[in-house]
Every structure is written in C-alpha cells, then in structure tokens.
Image 1 (cartoon, each protein chain N blue to C red):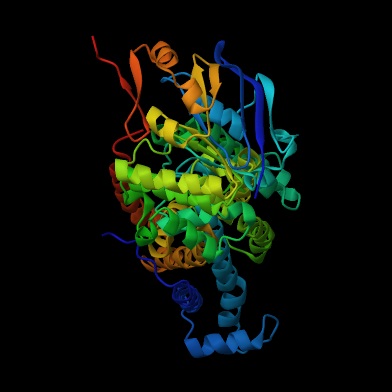
Image 2 (tube, chains in turn blue, green; image 1 turned 180 degrees about the vertical axis):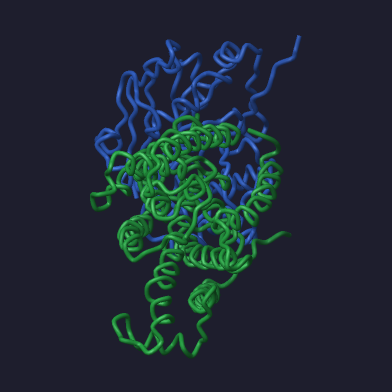
Length: 253
Length: 343
C-alpha cells in the first residue's frame, strides 16, 4: 500500500487565462500534503490536474514514475481516489449503495467487509439505508469520504474535505486522515483552515494566483509575513503555552 | 428517519415473470375472436403446422395473435430498457426515447428508407431507422448537456423541436408517397401492434436481443455515472466512450421498436420509474426488471387498445399517452421539487 505521485511544472491555461503556472507538488507514502491559498488561487484546479481531470497545458503528473495517461482508467482508480467538494447524485441511491460504488474499480462491489469498514470509519453506518439525497451536507460529505475509503487506494486527493463539517466532525475526520497516513497512504488535501494545516500536514504548498509561492514543513512556511501577503490580511502566528500554534487575523494596533 | 424502502429482488422477479406470463395468456385468448383457455392450450399443443379441426382459431392464434403478443413483449422491453439507459446517461429521470425525440428520429429514418425503396432489402428499414434514432440521440445529447450536467429545459425543448420536425417530415412523406408501405401518419406517431407479422417479429428480435445483452454490461457504469462525470472517471469509468456506446444501444433498441410499431410513447418513461421506486436505482436490477415490466405494460395497453372499443381498434399510443401523460406531469412536478426549480 504505497505509491508516490509527482506533479512537475504543471500549467493549465484555459481561454487565455493561466490557472496554474508551472506548479510542483508531490506526495509519497506516509505524507499529508496540504494545498493552501486564497480563493481563486488554483487549489482545486491543481487537485483536478493531479487527479487527471484535465489535459495539462504544460508539465507532467506521474504516479510511481508513470505518467497518468499511461494508465488505463481502472488501473488509475486503484492507485488514487478523489473526494470532490460536493457530489450531487441524480438517483435515490442509499448510503450503502453509494459507498459500495467505491469498490467498482476492483470489480467487487459485494466486498461487504471493506464497505462496512469504510462506513464505520466515517461514522455513517447508521445512515446506511437512508437515501443520499435526503442527507444533510455534512452527512453527504462523510458518505462521500466513506466511498473514497472503500476505493482503498494508496493515494487520496481530497478537495476541501472539512469545509462543511462542524468542529467535532472535523477533528474525527482529521484523525481518520492521520490514520490513513499512518497506514502508509499518501494524502493531498486542499484546505482552507490554516490551523488544521499547521497541525496535520507533513508538508504544505501555498498557491497564489496560480503559482506555488512556498512549500515545505508547515512551521517553516506558514509565517506571518507570507500569510499576510497572500491573504491581503494581517495575520499572526502564535505559540500557546502547551506548545501548539494558532494562526489568526491580527487586529492589534 | 426516512429510510429507502426496497422490495426483495426475488419477490419482484417472480411477480414480474408471473405477470408477464398471465398477460400473455390473457392477450392470446382475448380479442374480437375469443379463444377459451382450454382451446388455447390445445392449439399450443397442436403446434403451428397442425391441420387443426378449428382452422379459424388455429390461424388466429398462430398467424395473428402470437406474433402480435411476441412483438408487444419485445418492443415494450426494448423501449423500457432504452428508457433506463437514457435516464442513466443523461442523469435525468425525464429522458425517454419518445419525449426527447429519439423515437421520432427513428420514425423519420424508417419513412425515408421506405420511400427510397430500402424496404426491399433485409433490415433496410431498421438500419436507416437506427441511423435516424442514433443521430437524434446524439443531437439531444450535444444540445442539452453542458459541464457534465443535463439541462432539463434544454432537454425537453430539444425533444419538442425534434418531435415537431419529425412529425412534419413524416406528414410530408405520407402526403407525397401515397404508398401502402408508408401506411399512415397515425401509424408512426401513435404506434400500433396491429400490423404485427412473423416477419416484423423476426426483424426486431435479433436487434432487441443484441441491444439488451450489450446494455447489461453498462449496469455498473450507469450506477457510477449517477455521481457525475468527474467522480465516475475517478472510479475508472471511460465516461465519453461509454456514453457514446450507450447512445448507440439506445438508438438500436428504440429504432428497431419504432421501425416495427411506430412511436409508442411513455413506456420508456413510466416503466423505469416504477421499477426505480420498487427496487431502487441500481441498474443491474433495473435493466432486466424494466424489460419484464415493459413487456407486460405494452401488452396490457395493446389489449386495452383492441378490446375497449372492439371491434374497432384504438392506436396503441392513444392508450399509453392516456395513462402516461398524467404520469409524466406528476414526474415533472416531483423532479422540479427535488431540484428546487428549473435548472
């Protein structure tokens, strides 16, 4: 259960607008890479490019040293799973049926053990007979994540996985993400919450206007100077007495 | 909390098989010429070439009623399966061969084939009908989709436009051709099983069987397409090739049906929807159960068409539209509610 993904010098130009400008990002087994940046910086575009959703204008994405387009779609689906921001399902599938769809690359949607384990891990097993469409947005997000877990891939690409979760669900989600990393999987997640990135990421990549302006360990990268510049907002990074770090807007005179 | 209710698959399967069997027996026995159940079994026992004592009953059964019943089952099953696949690839429960203009496109193809004399070739009409049907499916698809979603309004409007255009072409063809083979505008626009012969049955069955066998391989893919194109691709589905193949299968099923019976509306809409309510949306079960129910529904509609005003016969499409149109309105309403308005 290990794989490495390398995106090098990835550019995406659409209708004359440069959405990504020669961005590098990589993730290996046991890493949690957070992609950060303000709205419109190209975070979701980068995740889509890395997932193989769009043709690249320049650069290359490889998994285990093979370019994405050298993979058959089903082989790629056994290497990496993708959690989109929000999934609208067009027919009244039940939660269990949705999670079971995660098994389809393996052609064994009857694999009860993995399906049940994925639902338990995301705490949605009590929703199994509910129709996905009738769930709250937070429940839908956890069900979608359970589907991604059922896909059982060494690499996971998550687009704002915690955006619609409350603080308790967010913590439970992140402990799942951490356990995935401990199992030797690699995770790339687009995040908005800088504190979450600071606590959970092994590496962060900060995008700004389609360019990668910094990457490295969160403590080295997430500095007041860099954040204030990127977000057009004065931001402070404080250490608390118990050794954790808090990032927040700075309103001191 | 609202849990999705699903009826046991085996119970539904047995029910649908029994329903189809009983409907077939009832249809074989009933009509302008009544055949009692005992005579019916006798005639079946005698076989097609037997010099039966009751020649009338024998001929009615083997030459008129049996081909009609078989055609009804095959056409109904084809339309229902075509409906399931269309709804799956469009991600929309309102898609159906008749409402979106696929059947009309097939009818235009069939009429043109007859005018230029292709009906002299084996499967000539079916092939051109297939081209017409597939072309209009592709047209609807290209026009009504953007960013991986089907726009409901565009879908329905495209259907209206294609149906109107096809109706005009058919009307024109019937007007200028004055050929028995063209039959009538009523035949194409309202459909009938009244012209069923073993020849028409023989033309439909291979195409229907091929279409249904191929459709079985889409079941898993149609499920994942419900997640949207991108998520389906992330699960290893080759979205565009699959969609093109599925469009071809819809074209095949709908066109072979239309070439034999004219346009029969609403079967492809009603039947998949009922099965989705009973069994849930998983396509593996939906496809074959919809085929069974499609056969029964079409048979029952045909039975009503030929017995309600007996000895006169209503066009089949009149019966399916009488039942189907109100159902379609209900479906529109609930779809609008679920989607929170038109989008």
